Amino acid sequence: EAEVAQSPRYKITEKSQAVAFWCDPISGHATLYWYRQILGQGPELLVQFQDESVVDDSQLPKDRFSAERLKGVDSTLKIQPAELGDSAMYLCASSDGSSTSYEQYFGPGTRLTVT
Amino acid sequence: AQRVTQPEKLLSVFKGAPVELKCNYSYSGSPELFWYVQYSRQRLQLLLRHISRESIKGFTADLNKGETSFHLKKPFAQEEDSAMYYCALRGSGTYKYIFGTGTRLKVLA
Image (cartoon, chains in turn red, blue):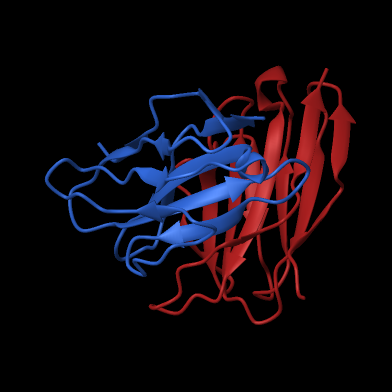
């Protein structure tokens, strides 16, 4: 069964360093989501792509975060510079993007620790 | 403001007891409501959505637009139901999802 892949699974970095996360959605899925999940909270949408276009990045801290999905397939989320408050689980999800689709398929997440 | 509220962080019940996980939402428009579940060491996955009106693993959820609620219910809890449950809504148009803070369900033997 196809799954969403994410790497790395764990990342420890020092504050002020740059960090990047990668996501490979299920093949054919047009919609890709990046979420941040702080311990004890639910996932919070950071950015949503439809193919290679950003649909929603209203919650993305654009001074330090960037996301791209150049060919409309896999995606990279970058943080530069990382801050202590960025420690969280970063989840990627995808869906087929049709108007009738509803299910998001989640990856295993990348747990980021900023020291 | 668009918001999903799950008032209980932790709910403990005994095996065989009824379960109700509460979810209230605030949204201007007609959202779709979902329950997602995360079992230990597994990925977040869809449990059910309000449009389908189906029972999954014995769980049901009814959308009450008057009370803006979408509570998740199961008449007889099983130990394998122990997990983290998230209520979520999907807005119309952009299909943006908003998640609640989650409720951890512990089913005791």
